[in-house]
Length: 432
Ligand code: NAD
Image (cartoon, rainbow, N blue to C red):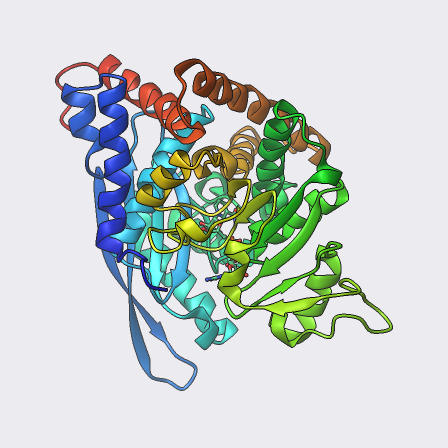
């Protein structure tokens, strides 16, 4: 897509926001210096014995952006476009995000440059285990706790946790979150990002006196985060009028049923190959196939972005006709595009607040693993809702009080917390 940034610019773009916030809330000196670059960047090579006997070596990274508030926390991405700059940017966003929702964590992220669709299941497992062996020295429950991200899931986390246990010669479940519940994972983790995004949307909609039944939502992406968001939003009465995947999009004015789409997608793999209505499943009566990126320009009440970063940029921002944006993906709107949306008065519920459900429930998993407790799904969902309500209210009120966007308010809340902690640590720190 033209107008998108390369990854080197992605990090500059993220730092632009940081500089702006530091100026606005008068953060200078040590804290500002510390926050301008990651505290640790580890590049690794992951050799994998392929099924045909050959050896392939995949480049990977683990970045810890800042660990002032606690151990680094963040997912591991397997994707052919992964680069050090992208992982660094994602780790910076994790640091801000954890601080926005008041978690005792810093920010981290990992990635391997690989197309996982081209690997067999066993090759994927060897890659996951090899990656953990490569980064084991910098991870652990008190140092850096990985989790799933794009193209990694609970199964992959299970393999990784098992590999870490082997290296540690014992059970260390708190070293990785997003594990299957049988291996110490938390109930509610799989749906947590989508559920959290819906809470933030609900809280905003309530302030705007907007009812779910009157709200038409288009969702970019149909992976883990998007599906659970769409499913829960649909159950609550929101009208999901469009969804997309990397190959195409579908639209229905009357609204789509996300569970029926999932069932179809599991059979046909691509949205565009679907049979929309047959004897067993009906996605909607009047489904239309549309171009993948046409979804971004639909006239809807809410455009939920749940695919990848940098989807709304300088080139396409003026074509956006949604009433509001919900960022479920990390960094789906570039900072230039964000300014333009602000000028146009289109509110954006920002990633550093709206997609924190996953890391919040990861935190609950870590707490359960460390205390040896198991909480019920109901308990977890309730804690998630309460935390998001508290922290979102602070962001919404700050935005109102200081007459700034929700994103600026969330960044101020997060960066202020990190900067304050950096100052409290004293003047002679020489690490992290
Ligand atoms: P996923 O791999 O399960 O899904 C990604 C989806 O995006 C797929 O359906 C893919 O087909 C689609 N996609 C890719 N490019 C697209 C394009 N150009 N247009 C439309 N669709 C496209 O990943 P996920 O776990 O759902 O994560 C999605 C986003 O949410 C990422 O930015 C991730 O960092 C962020 N996120 C995820 C979690 C989580 O817990 N899963 C937590 C926080 C943030």
